[in-house]
Amino acid sequence: MRILHFNQRDDGGAGRAMLRLHQGLRADKIESSAFVQVKTSDDEFIFTPDGALGKLSAKLKLSEHISHLPLRLYKQRTSGAFSPPFALQSFTDIVHKLNPDIVHLHWINHGFLDLKALQAFQKPIVWTLHDMWPFTGGCHYSSTCDRYKHTCGACTVLGSTKEKDLSHYIWKRKNKHWKDLSMSIVAPSTWMANCARESSLFRNVPVQQISNGLDMNQYRPIDKQSARQLLNLPQNKYLLLFGAANIEDTRKGLHLLLPALKQLHESELNDKIELLVFGATSFQQMQEAEFPINSLGRFADNLSLSLVYSAADVFIAPSLEDNLPNTLVESLACGTPTVAFNIGGIPDIIDHQQNGYLATPFEPSSLAEGIKWILQSPDKQFLHEAARQKAEQSFSLTAQTKHYQRLYESILSGMPA
Image (cartoon, rainbow, N blue to C red; front, side, top):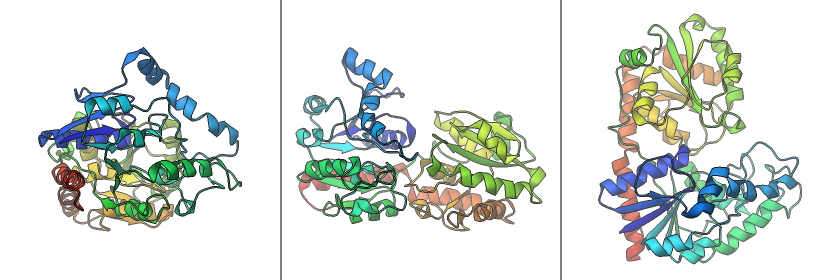
């Protein structure tokens, strides 16, 4: 069985999820390969566009810039992510050359893959939903808008009041090109699966839920004292961990985390707390929290990330919308309890007051209460063990790989999954 994955890059949230699945399949003797615009790993079965034009386009982000040109017409658009589906290349030659049994799509935006290419592939398609884009008129998360259940238009992300705006045009193109595809949809979270089933584009397409997986030998608890010593972190403080790839995105919820931290600063825990931040987090913005900040920058390898999660007392994810965040699952696998709002796919990960705390959306005071609840828990060992147990039971890479193999086999045999 040959599987060819498409993802715009092999890092970032969707890229890491794709890379893990790809490597899990290969470990199970499945001929898996992947095609990306931007490659950061050394995996020999992940390919990038050939030729000078493809390499120059990737380096200068030409496809991304060109695909986003229509957005200049919408001067009132919000900070929410919106991706027009226009691309310079279709990669049908790659599909015909590698001749996979199944094409597995992941995150194909930033001008990576044109809509018309999917029909030209002439292969069964599996599409894993890393956000809502595949069934919307272009937004990646719809917030309170439910127009994706109908035909899109008057897009709130675009700041548009016109029914026949760019979002409606994109929806029509998707409806045209999706209609006759042999396609199966996979959602990592229960919430995303339900959204897809309710959408006008996917309501007649098979949708099932398969959680993203982690290698539990790579992400594992490390002795907290040792982890802090290796990272040169204080041993006698509560360390609150926070990180995001794009902190400027309002959806990540920094504007709600900061008042929660302010409440903690005014509590009896004031002099016992320090912050631990990683990723592309704005150090300047975090200064408003008034706690000492340990800024660790970016980490690419699994061991370093395991050290960071293990060093923390609690991981905080104040997202307003989210699917199945890798960071929350990684934290649980390292035995570190988590706090997040009770939204989206988060309840699939956090069992309230068992391995973490589900805060009331979107109340900073509830977020602060959840952090305090974990820090002051009389049985922290139970929380750490419950976190690890949840990860092993629900998010192992082995289980995810087996689920996908059964799906692939059912598609090729013509039998329902």
